[in-house]
Length: 485
Image (cartoon, one colour):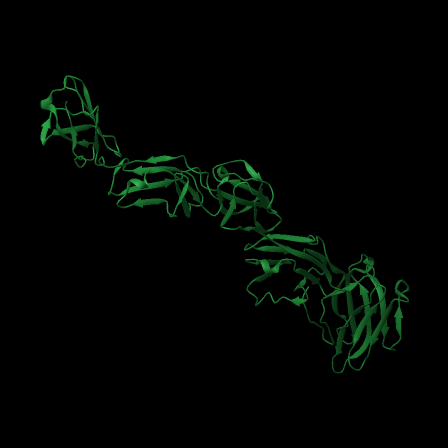
């Protein structure tokens, strides 16, 4: 019921509080004011509860100025009444729910129209604001999403005002873009991780009694952030240890898997492989997974490329060309099929003797027969040195040396048999043919041994020979005289 002015011919009365709230046990003070028209005479002022059936009289003052309190309100009802300034307030102590209702004050004057001037107000039992469903002790939200904190309240009157605090700081929801409030619900938009563990407090009041408060702690959840070394190198037969660092809220479960495999090799943040073998080399993925308050999952990964180093495998020696002709160029290559990292140096031997060369390719220019022999090599990297290769024979071909001729017997008796032998001290490969001359004339024979049966005196003379192999023909031998007796 709104403010109203009921005007009689001789008096008026007003009340600026058409609805009056008071807490149980408190005192209600109804602030009426009245005026008496010029030339009129005040007769009576009366207060009563008009919402009761029948109406209940409370207090009355006659012209004499002595208040009369009705028995039901003795000790509870008092008035502040003055005839000079028109105050006509009623005080009612110890208010209970039974006092709730409409109260009317009426002023009567003497005059032609003696109907009283009246004004009413409603008494409502006030109940301080209280939060009906406090927020949980922890309010969970994903990073970057909106968080809502609700503080529903009840009370009489039900017109509530809210104050929100971030820690001890009062939030101005009207100017701070990150915060908004509507009917007891605080919304935090685009929630940053920095607000984690912040206490938020709502304070609600309806201007009756003390405000009610409730608090919650904000937990800002985020998907795992994972880091691990991009590369890790370990020697074969040693222990590989790689640590995966995970930051997540809530806490995450962690596992390691080798790329291409569905089987976890570790269910903790640490990947440890003892006595690691070269077959374990590859890319390993650290995966961290957590579960948010809404049941959804967050995942983060990081990869580590594992290199397993091992010494070179037993090498092999390849010679090109082989055989090689003396004074030409020959290349010897030492090759190891498996080596991580690749060999950094090599060592060579020939017939068990060290060769001064550290490269994987040994090139001999203008090769000499003295460089022929069995060659071996080893390969070395940062891990160690390989087993020595098997021997490979370098063959250096050269034409036969100047041969000599030997005659048996010499002298020889005519009609007997004589043997002439052409011998070259060195030849690689061995001679494949020979040529003979007697006294500068060719003898039709290509073998290294010339046998003359039934020798005749005409076959006596100076014999020479040459030896031939794939490389070439030797210098002609010196002359040897065959004497036929």
